[in-house]
Image 1 (tube, rainbow, N blue to C red):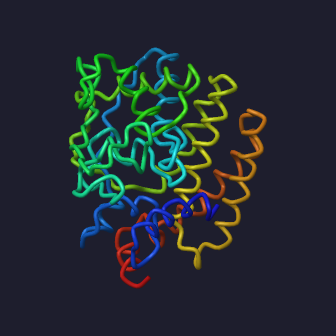
Image 2 (cartoon, rainbow, N blue to C red):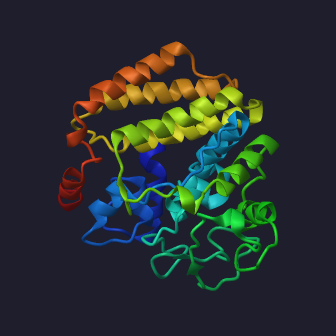
Length: 302
């Protein structure tokens, strides 16, 4: 679990020569500042259409999970824990994104970086502003090369910009459905929302629920997305205080790995143990890194 939660981010920061390893994976690509703890505990709200059509809802949920999975991108990005959501936080432009391998200024990324792709790499640091994907379905051209279809653009991002493998058909259709469902009319009134234990728990449950309607290849990707979400949840628990909970999460992650190998969905027993752990953690959430003050203190004293 510790490898799932922190290994990739630690490699990123070590490559850039930081003074400290990250406490959270997102720290590796978040601009250092006095407001770092706030930025790591808050995010813009997701502006997501939730259609009445059940099959379309299932498609959107599949795509949502993969949008947050580093595995989708492949190459160095996947190995180091970077997902679409890192640059496009909940579908928005991440103005705090700063990763030396991809940018020389916050809120931008070099789409021709050799670090990410031998296909597109041009040897020049030339980042462009990260676009907001909310409302992307209304556009007629995509990216700095003005690709004329969203499917073509997404394919080029995965296969050329990041050297990933083209996803299975159902998974790719879900990703496109999710992007098209990012609707400005669905934006909540608040500019940002706190990242909470409930929200992190949801990021585990939703891929597992989506797997109920997925084919074998997509199910494996969704179970991996759930494992990755477990890792992100685990890193929010200070190791010294939550050693027993880390051990439980590690066991749950291993079980998901075994299920993934067989494309088998979680059974009632797995879900019950996960729910029981979350109930226990809920009584101590104020002592975790979901709490901005606790995280700020840990960043200062590490």
